[in-house]
Length: 585
Image (tube, rainbow, N blue to C red; front, top):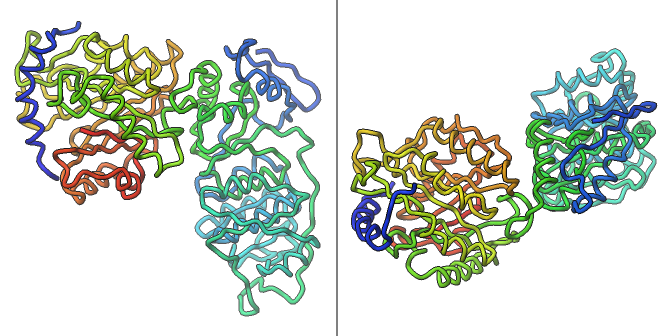
C-alpha cells in the first residue's frame, strides 16, 4: 500500500491559510373475518387522497387471503436454494413432487414442468438430500419426478408414501411423454434473469425455460438407478391450489428458482423486483403498497426479516420524495460521480479548485463521461469536507476545524439545485464524530445531503495529529448511524447516504459489529487506496474481505497520487464490483 505522507503534508500546508481565508470559527387495525379469508384494514399514514399509491394500495388491500397464510409480511428463507421452506408454506400435501439435481438447466426444466403440473419443485444438488427427502415424506407424495442427477439411490422404499419414481431423460420426446403437452422453449439470457423468468411461468402456456449458457443433461441407458426406459410414464398433472386466495408474493434476482416455481405451481402471483427493497422505485412500491400490516410473502433471506420489510413498505408510502434519478433508495437506482474537496480552495481537493457553479459544470461533465458504461443514471455529486483535521489544537483543543454551515451552503446548494447529491465529510481529530455531525443537522435535514466519516483523521485524546493513520471503533460509528437514522425518520426524509472511508483494516475497529440494519441509511464503504493500479486493487480486495452485503462499494480516483489516474471506462469496467460512488481528489 502506498504511503499517505503526501496527504499529511498537504494538510499541514493548507490548514492555516484555510482558517484565515474563511474566518473559521468553531460551530457551535381492525380485523374483518369471513370464511377462510382475513382482511385487515391498512392503517398506513400514506392512506391519504393524494398518495401516489392510492389505487395500488386499494387493490392490494382488497385481496382476499386464506387464513392458512401468515397475516403479516413474512420472509421465506431459502438458504440452501432447496425450495423446501416455500413448499412447506404453500402445500399441506401433494401427490406429486418434482426434484432437480445440480445444474441451472436441470432446475429450470424442473421448474417449467412443476408449474404446468401444479407440483411443488425441490432442488437437491447434493448436500441437502435428507432435507428434500423429508419434505417429500411430509407432503405424502406418491409420484416423484427426478430431473437430472437428483437424489442418487432414492427408491420407492425411501419414503413410505412413494409408489412411483420417474426419471426424466432430459429430451424433448421425454417431456412430451411425461406431460402429453407441447412446450415452447424460452431462453434465459443471464443469471440475473433466472428468478424473473421463472416468475412469469404460466401453467396453461407450457413454457420450457432454457439457460443460454448451459444445456440440459440427457440421460442414457448407462445411468445407474432410476435409469430411463424407452417410454416414460406419464407424470400426473394436478389442479390449481390457489383458488385466488394466495397472498402477494415478491421475488428478486437472488430468489431461488425452485422457490419461485413452487409459488407459481400453487397458483400464486409472483411480483418480481430488481432489488429486494420495495422503495427502489414507484413500480416496486405499487407492488406492495398497503401491505405493511397484511399478508405478503417474500422469497429469500435477501429481503431481511418480515418486520424490516414491513418497515420499508411503511416508509416508502410515507416518504414519497424521490432522489435524483428517481426512487427512494440512494443505491441502487443510480450511481454517483463526485468531486471531493473544500470551499477554501484547491489544496484539499478538486471541488475547491473552482467556484461552486464551475465545480458543478465540471462534475456534471465528468458524470456524463461515465454514463455510456452503465445503464443506471449517473448523477453528479460533491463530497464537501465540513470539518478539517488540523496540525493545531485550536481553541477547543480537538485538532479539527469545524466550518460553519454558511461556509458550505453555497456548494451544497449548487450541486443539489443542479439535480445532484452532496455528502458532508467529517475529519474529527480528537473530537467525537457524533458531536461534529450534529453541527450540520440543518444541512442533513435536506433530502439530497448525506454524511461521511473519515477515520483517517480520528485520533485518541492524548495523540498528536499526523503521527499515525487514525481509527474509529464500531460503537462510535453506530452512535452516528442511529442518530442519522432517527433524523431521517423524524423528518420523513428519503434514504440517506452514510459513507465510511477506509484504506487500512485498523481504521474501522470491529467493522463486523457495525449495525447496518437501518433502512433509513445506505451504508457505503469508500475505499481510499491510491498509487499504482496493483496497489489500488489490493486495497479494494482487502477491504471487501468479510464485508457485509449491506454495504455499497465506493472508489476514489486521485489526480496526483494515482499512477495513472483511472479513466471512467477503467473505473467502471476494470474495478470489480463496479463502484456505486466514485470520488475525485
